[in-house]
Length: 266
Image 1 (cartoon, rainbow, N blue to C red):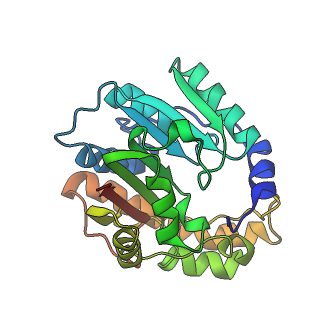
Image 2: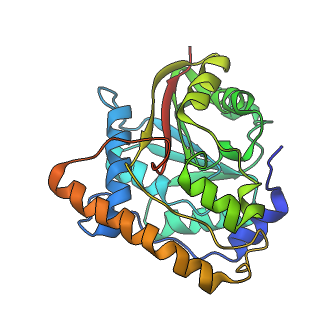
């Protein structure tokens, strides 16, 4: 069961605006995290013919990733979400970006039969950590894959410093996540019966904390908490500037933004 619940996501997407198109080649420091993710995706698809292949994003509500996968790699894109409002927003994003695709309202744990073992790639970005049974969740997501297909997962690193701060400053939001380390994700992949290709932390540092409540409203004393967090945000960006000169610094459980994994269905 989703620790957040369907009502949370319905309200979450109702309060959200459409995201700007993701600029994975942008030179702005604000685009730097996307450039790091772009490297991860290109590593995942290295030696893999992606043109006209089928990709499914599970938990696609208000996601700009599908447009990126079509424009950068030539995928035929599909999305699945159990929030009707989230699906509606994703359809608007595809329409805005002039990307053809199918967005379906449904349950990833009870898939429609015409979508089982259909896709070459299945991705979930910030989804798996909302479920207690990580290996069971990955196993369910892999049911959409053809044999030999790729399962790509990214999730925030709430087992590090950002998670510690999140738990202190906004525990209700922390509590709808499962803090997962690289090692726990790797173990869950193997327990799900998948072949692990790689599991890594990504970004050497990114201390990002959500200061909105589970009802979408700002939590009390937000101004003071934002002031406390400013040095962490400025410090993260200072490291990003440095890395554009020196190259990427080592990742770690303590400071990295998240975990990125790629596995193959047997």
